[in-house]
Length: 252
Ligand SMILES: [Zn+2]
Ligand SMILES: [Zn+2]
Image (tube, rainbow, N blue to C red; front, side, top):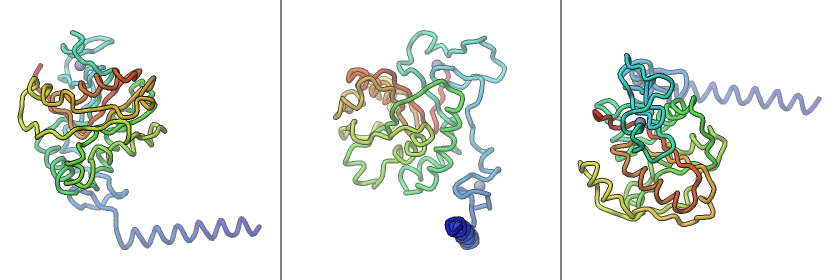
C-alpha cells in the first residue's frame, strides 16, 4: 500500500516537473523556433524543406531514383549492378542540398549539436525497412587534432541514438584516424587517395566476426566508407554497413 502510494506520488511529482519544464522551456523547432510537440523535432514547414530519400532507390547503396523508374524486384543503381559498392548496405536520410547544407555546417562547425536529435531520428527512420542486424555501431572517427579544436565528433552525436535504436553498443575505441589536411572539393579519385591509410584498427578483437554499422554526417563520394570497409574487413569484420544524414547525389 505504501509502495503504491509512493509510486503514485512519484508519478504526480514527475508529471508536475515535466509540466513546469514544458511551461518554462516550451518545445521548439531547432531550426526556426516554431512550437512543436517534442523538443528537438522539426516543425512541418522545416521538415518539408528537406529532400528526404524515399523510394524508389538502390537497394544496396540507397542512391535515389526518379519516381517513375521501375527496375523490378531488385532495384540496383548502375554502380551496384556493376559490383562497385563495397559496403554491404548504405543508407542516407536526405540529399545534400542548400537546405541540408544550412543545418550541416552549423552542426559540424558552430556547435549546433541540438540538430542531432532530428538528424539521428531521420537516419533511424531510413533504416527502418532494411534487413540488417549490426553487432556494433561505430561513428566515423575524427583525427584527434580536429576533435580537440571542434570539441565534439558530430558523427558520435548521431551514432549514439542509432546504437540505442538497434540495442547494440557504440564503439569509440577500436578505430583511430590520423590527421590529414582537409579534402576540400577534390574529385572521387583524389578523395580516395587522400583517405588511404588514415584509419587504423586499434582493437581487432572488437571487430573480428562483427557486423558493423558505420555512422557519418555526410557521404560525399563514398571514399571514407570504402576505406573504412577495407580496414575493417582486413581486421576480420563480417559485414560493414554505412548510414549518413545526407549524401551528395551526382548523376550516374
Ligand atoms: Zn521549423
Ligand atoms: Zn547502388
